[in-house]
Image 1 (tube, helix red, strand yellow):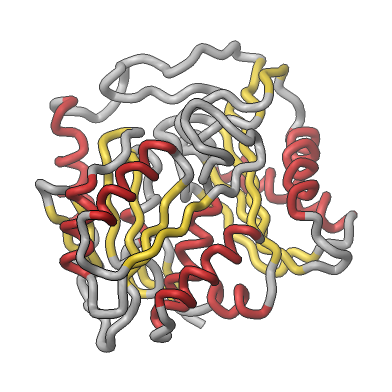
Image 2: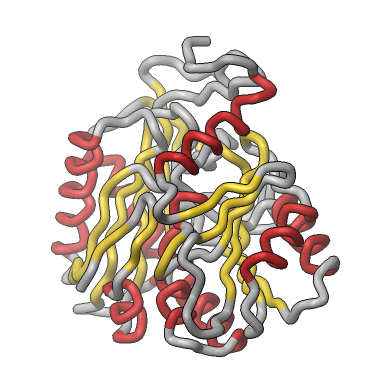
Length: 330
């Protein structure tokens, strides 16, 4: 295993310290229990957004803590759900009187621990379960479709709405809406290496790809010979569009996400292949984002995410955001 590591047991703590020092103008890192909170507290009361999950998917979720997105993120150990005491501690620090909204990817461990954390609170709270992955309907790891790269889109748009002073019910309703308008699917060329394991999670031949892979290396729909980028895009986009069923002239956000081990050059090529398919179907790419946002350690591969846009989603996607990993102004 070739990784920057001192002691396997300390990898998360040391990474969080480095992350906090790097972005000390945006966020603060708490250890034992581990959580990240935004440094600039809201001027007016707002719904507090908290997300989290296993580490190894950076910049998801801690990289999205800041103005216009999350108020806090709870990182678990690599590919392991955070614990309820992390959620309770984070919520106690960031709530401002308008309730807590948890944003949780649809994995069994995450859901169970966030539910336990919510039960420990004496604060009004609700939960959004993100399940944008169209590759599988059920697996060992989930209670249905998995939550993957669309999670970032949900976090961005609800984060914007929360900044306006919207109520907890309004934020929950809008987040569920964005989730339903979003679909993703990915493909992996290699496995990833979890530091504690010291070897790849699964074996895959040099000429093979895992089609519909999960962000922890879970199996997808099938394993097959590597195809061209256009052919891969055609299959992935076919499954996504079958799920979303967009209308003619539908405006969409097209997000190409890298899993951590694929160069940007290839991700932009995948964007080109995907956009050509949408153009042919008279689906308008109105917003776009390319890069490593929901990764799987050092896995080579990537995913396509499409969100059907309406005026409200556009408004809250375009609104200003300032986090470690996502930032722009109008």
